[in-house]
Length: 289
Length: 263
Image 1 (tube, rainbow over the protein chains, first blue to last red):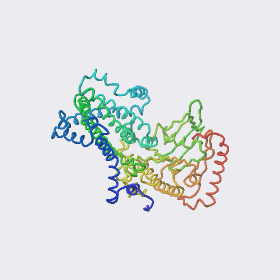
Image 2: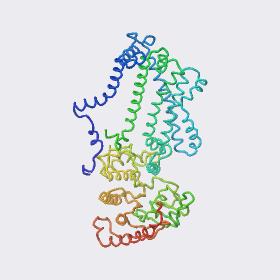
Image 3: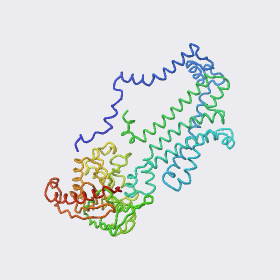
Image 4: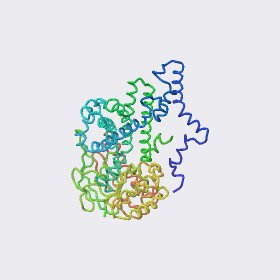
């Protein structure tokens, strides 16, 4: 074997577009920073010149101060909400993960059943396809009647929303499996269980995790809906309560908190995806940057 | 081990309201440790024939026996090498080679680590053992695929255009690699190809098939000495065989040009 016969992507590609010295590193930081900084600056200026009323749409500087008090309780700027951030953030986060957990688990469990068997497909798929067209928010009244006020309807709604992308993408992933791999494994003597655990699920994993990522996104949407309507804690509740008390600075701080936690949750999914899917990146455009 | 008997095998496929006869009354004997190549225009049923032996398809009529037993499905006694390399993209080369032996059906058959080492060495892939298939060249990928099949030690090797996706230089290197392996291990090999040179170069017997319906037109004994050498391709006996096969396949392809091909 001569060395020129192989040029592994691994050693060749990552050098492309990767910062090599301080200057290009600074330019990367700039690329990331320029858009958010521009928005914040524009927003601050609009408030400063009186283009928007400060109590309607407070500038970023005020939002940051209020946010600081929300978290620490140090300045009392947030009034009745001072120092409550951690409790609300925690309440939302655990609801998201509880709902996400059951929805995604059920979806990944049902996906292969629908994807691999015509019988289960006929039994389950039309119902799932119909139900997924009902916006999860339309389930709010029924879930309140059913579960009452509290965590139960919230976790139910979030899980319901997280279920569909996980189930549909898992089904899709299972159906997209390269038939040659399946035949090869059968030829080598793989039994049903081995086919599932060692061929079908690994091959479907990119699609499954794609669904899981969408589920996480939907979970954060629904936690806000649920907390506005069904519970008296969490960032969604904080947001709605502050709105009723005309505290738009707190409203915006709550919005940004939801965005931040949603972003971090997404990054967590991406982190696990990248660990599980090192093999899937190399031949794609994504793998080259 | 590895004798194949096909008697009066017919295979029809129903697609919607039309029925396609892929194989019509095919009789074929493949002796133990023989290399038989199947060649013919597209639509002649050569891949169907291979799939019947592999157990991926069942005959509509007739019998396919391997070592005297009717085939009930695919199994590790008949290793299949596919044109589209059947390597698991999420496994390293060595894990791909170890895959078959790690299945419950093959537990205790052989010392897995030892077999993997031997296969890596034999295929020249030792230095690439931790690579993923996507990081290999086409030739290396196909060698890894062959190694993963040889690891389960099948008595028969069924190959469906295994080198069809390779460039011609790599293809001829892979043909010699296959012959070397065969000289060492003496397995029964049934290989489907559309490359007439390849069909003759590798074979003890070349089966020439014709299409619509798929039939065996002629079974040609290839009496070239073994081990085969690349130079033989430019010598008279080889050329005579090639011209003979080419004439059959070409005539067939020209006649069938008006008929839509079903492979």
